[in-house]
Image 1: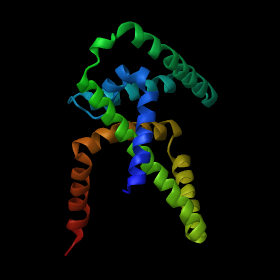
Image 2: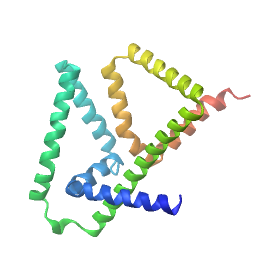
Image 3: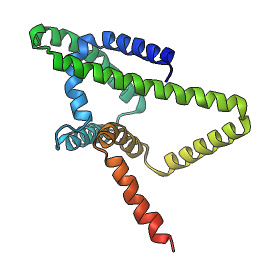
Length: 194
């Protein structure tokens, strides 16, 4: 990473930290849950997502109703969290250790956002440099996803995707992703080698 890129990432991290200032008391526990700092956090995530999706399934809400209710809840949370944190949390409870943790969270988030941006830039570069490869891969993936979504119930598919997204940080943090890949390699590949 060049000095210019490091300075740009540091600037982005500080902007992100400033934007998250009123959410800092909520972000630290959420980050702890996402990284599975306690052994029962994966069950909590799985149970929370399952409860939400079971409620949607039982109520048989339309897509528009789900979107409207979700956006209403997000708007309500966006309004209430800063107000409640300013009322319930005093400034003296914020320690240097918590500040370091917030900086670490902002750095990780900034790095993740930079990686996504790099992937997007790489895809745009491939689109210009090798359009036939870009369009063939894009169309193939979209057709595959269309076939999967027509085969599997969309609510179940979305449930699996949401669980996978929410459980991924903990799997990566605990090193279980590497363990799963090694196990799959041993079971699938080595078994079939002569």
